[in-house]
Amino acid sequence: MLWRQIVKGSRGSSTVSIGSEAHGADDLDFDLERLRARRNRKWTHFPGDGLPAWIADMDFRTAPPIQIALQHLVADEDYGYPDRDGDTPDRAIATAFARHERLLHGWDPNPDLVQPLPDLVQGMFTTVLAYTEPGDGVVLPFPAYPPFQEAINETDRRLLPIHMLNDGQRWRLDEEHLRNVARDARMIMVSNPHNPTGHVWKPAELQAIGGIALEYDLVIVSDEVHGLLTYPGYRYLPMATVSPEVAAVTVTMNSATKAFNIAGARCAVLHFGSSNLHDRFRLRFPRRSLGAVSVFGVDSTLAAWTHGRPWLERIRAKLTANRTRIATRLSESMPLIGYVEPEATYFAWLDLSAFDLHQPPSALLAAAGVITSPGSDFGSDYRDFVRLNFATSASLLEDMLSRIAEAVAPHSVDSRVASDRTVSPRTAIASSRTCDESVQC
Ligand SMILES: Cc1ncc(COP(=O)(O)O)c(C=O)c1O
Image (cartoon, rainbow, N blue to C red):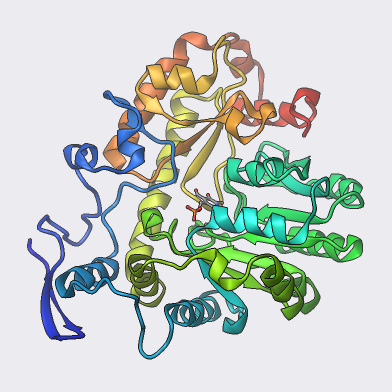
């Protein structure tokens, strides 16, 4: 079906066609041939027949309002310095972000304290550089998305890891450990919801982080890019909603790139919870030093935050079905894989420590045709894990799960683990990790 949409362009009305493939009621999937033909890193970096389930891109069709916005730019060949409805693009992004947060999460960010910038990793580095000095301690919950670690290590700050606890049912904050390291820190960086475990921080955990930050005078950097990707029954809360006091020491980072699958558009925001944080940041990074967001980033982000909800709801339903599929397949045919279902994100954080592999699990799975992110990237204690990106079609996910089941089957060292326990083996193994010193839970 050719989907056509009339949009009003700066030079009058122009006709814009959105894709030439079926984009029907529930057709959000590309076929495999089309996925392989595209030039994104997910599908090109590992040549061969392997199915990529690593980098954080989704395999789904794009939200129509984003396609319309981008097609509009192309139709009008409108690539000059942008202006949006009489506002600078920065202001338009800041206003759209504030409105979107107010509508969805009841948070009321101040657009005057929003700084657009090309990407979140840049936000990680600049905030570390702005609020800390070489040698200062920065707390980071582990397992940890690698760029957080890089932003601390590569700027000669001191990484203070705290390891999340896992009772086999859920991940949670180790508040006591946080309190112990906080006295030696200047900042805490949080992935909220958490990449790679998919944990949605609960109000009590956010309050604990906020309270400890206030007590020890830490700046909180809260990366909330996965906030829209929660599962039924879980509610993400922006860190800045904990209390006005906590908001005042929090820099929130966000973008439309994960939920709307537009990482290549390069557009993100920092929100400073107080003028004090804003001024301190500005001293280190004058506005012009940050560069500017591209016209593609501006328009795709505005479209996502303003008109993207219907598409997003369909994507969330697909991800929910995939998440159920994973739980079912694991309990049916791979019960020794340790797994806590994510509460948000499209990542399954899988523990293969019960297998006798003699190689990193990601290498075993890659040889079997599933490219996952190695657990060691998220911390040296997580060598036995892999992160599986399940934002793909149901059929590709089935294929991946079958390949994984076949790959691990010959490596089950001890079937007694499965038969001797009255509780689910997956739970038993995950529980045992809580007390295993090598994991530093
Ligand atoms: C928690 C988190 N922050 C940041 C990023 C990267 O964002 P950007 O591409 O804007 O640097 C990702 C990508 O997966 C992520 O998961």
